[in-house]
Image 1 (tube, rainbow, N blue to C red):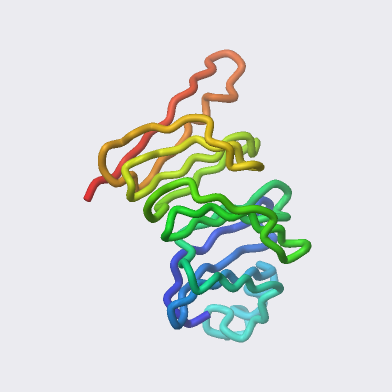
Image 2 (cartoon, rainbow, N blue to C red):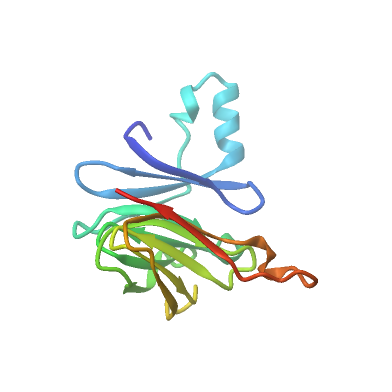
Length: 173
């Protein structure tokens, strides 16, 4: 959108993408049809600048969005904020279905497993938390001891022969 873009993420199936950005101390997420962006670029429009978004989410003045992931069937977004809040945003109704403060500081990363059964957060407060992605109920907390900038879950958690429940945290000052 021509502002300070923080994140771009394709939806499952590559038909949509979102762009997260800040403007005048407020966060926004714009959702685009990917084909419309490609058509704009083919016509010589700089990075699809004149392409109209299909939806825009405006954040509260109380916090800034830091990262987001697509939810099941691309019908929702799970959004993290700079004050430790996680938001479940329903794209069909354009409403926040629920939100929860799960950290005491900024959330740097969100990781959602491919089967949408586990949500992992990494935060400036030094904790990595495993949450239920539909309720944000905390399953387990891992104290990393310093700011946890990223966290991932091993893809082997769903391997029937060599199932492994590993997660990796990384970060620091």
